[in-house]
Image (cartoon, rainbow, N blue to C red; front, side, top):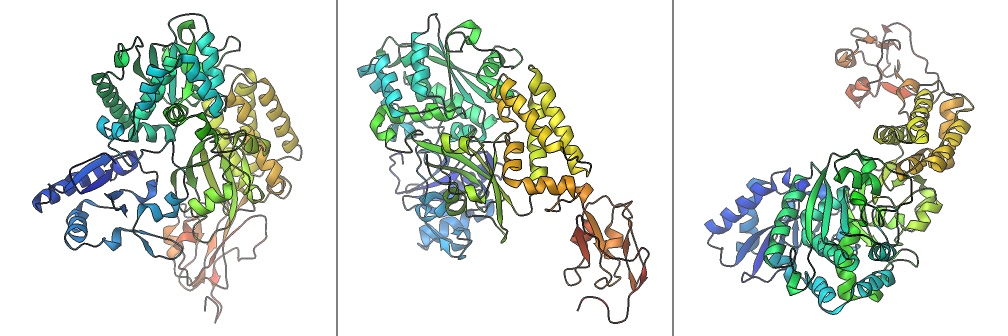
Length: 617
């Protein structure tokens, strides 16, 4: 933590997630309570960025002890101050409680979600005030930039990055040092450094530690000989842009950005370029065209962007997390960084845990950590007693991997071999209630909508694949549909210009590869094993359990249920819209509504009197 005259600091998370839950007002309430209690000389209330454990927000941490409070509300402020600073004990009801034991875990460092991480890129997230450069400097900020400028030649910097084994964190995994060397040797001036900050994890780092990104960009610019940089941010990342602008202003005041940095001949400035959210702009050339004010679309290579990028000039484009790793490499050395991770994938991976997982949020682990450890040890496993079914890695165009893949290491090679990708680092967990055909349909529909339409395989192939899967989930699948999907997928992979088209078939290919029985059930048996696809499921009221209470009749939005008092109710399948309201509203003690797919359930066609002694016991 930054040095302070106070004995304690109360850190209030004001990342996007926590701020949406009024954490700024919590900050204010705590500051007012500290003042009212006469403790201002010994306690300081500070803003921080995202801690990563988003579902537990708003998060408040008391340092130096590391007391970790979750779900804090504005009205909790007086009790937070009184309990810890007057009564000298933590406020137990706000502590994190382990779901397995329901025991309180007071300290930040002891919570499994944090204790099993290895935070390098996220080293300052939740630890410093992102709006105060002094906090970053106190933790060694900008020492790497000073070292590079004062004691290293550009090719020495590039060589250090090469030896570290750092690979691009945006998804492609291209060796960073190799790209920098190509940009350094490229002919033409001026040269540009571009930071792609389009992913959720990128936004969180920008909000929590903007100076690490600025420092990484400046070191990259020094290495390749650039004087201008651009950071590409989605226009709705308001907090990230605000804090990055503040960081640039503070860095300029200290001569860490701008003209003749630290008294050297090296000058470097950065501008923010706002994108509209087109997913295809994650591809390098499409991103550069967007910065130029043009429609984001890929292009045939060569030339490469390092030779002809922005406005036809040499441009080095890196992901935000790649650049945030660079100061550590220069400061601690390539050998230190290379000692973390696997032979082919060095360093750490920042992962976003989503879906059917107990602990949603953002984590960082060494490359090579198994999916099992990430999902179950850090992520807490699948909640509500459900069985794990699949995990998708890398975002919407990543592959869906089964339980047998849980011991795969999270690295570029292993995931690619299994049919998935590292991608942006997203980890989406699916439980037993997930239909893999329906999941592939959703992911593929997203990719179809995000396609720029430039190349024929992607423009025509994705809609055709979605059309086939729509037909399958509607109960109209044909035996040849699977082979047809595989054929179109191969065309997309071989013929698409950019990564969107080449990776979009992954959810389909892997779900067929690992869950083919579900596809065949949909096509051959007109049955959805997970009871998800509406056209293949029906709701029935069981005559031996119905009590004739009328709750489902009154709740049905389609007036598809008939039956009076002491009458077995009946669902008209021609009217039923498969909304499941009847299943949700039927009292658990009756459980008279059954959801079924591909099976015959014997029920009356018209309401009949309830038989004597019938019904739930």
